[in-house]
Image (cartoon, one colour):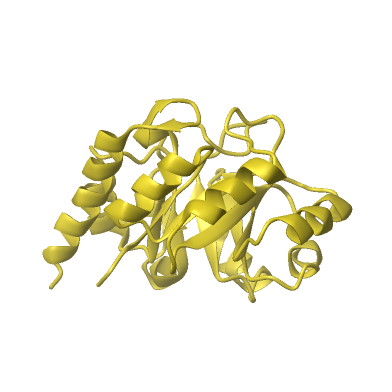
Length: 210
């Protein structure tokens, strides 16, 4: 069992390079103006240009205007789109790109129904629910709420860091884990030691499954 790793909220080429060097499978670029980790198209293109081959680039949007996404895709070579708001399946499919759909784990959410609703998504990204905050809360949700049958298509996010990612993987066994604030020195600036510790913990716990 290999757990994929996405490092989100990359704002600088050097952080993308370090994440890739340490073994990240994907990096996330935030295109949401209210986020402290938001990047411009030119910043994103600079980060992507610095990455080695075989690192997936993910663009994060929150209830975007379609025209803005079209314009950005014309400027930035994203591999995957992550929708983090209340987007409909029709909007997610509109751009002809593989996508992830983020689901905030509010009380009573039906993950099986959401998986069926977004049936062509490459996966569901599960994040902590806080009213009015689309993501980046820095808090974990109750991992026991993830049905075992869905784990293989789940990207687990929400409050992960070097200190709890191993426990999260053991309990949920997700396809991938996603971290942003848990490996930062400050908002939008990654801490290399925390990156190394986080990725090291993922790889360590993987060895227990082999």
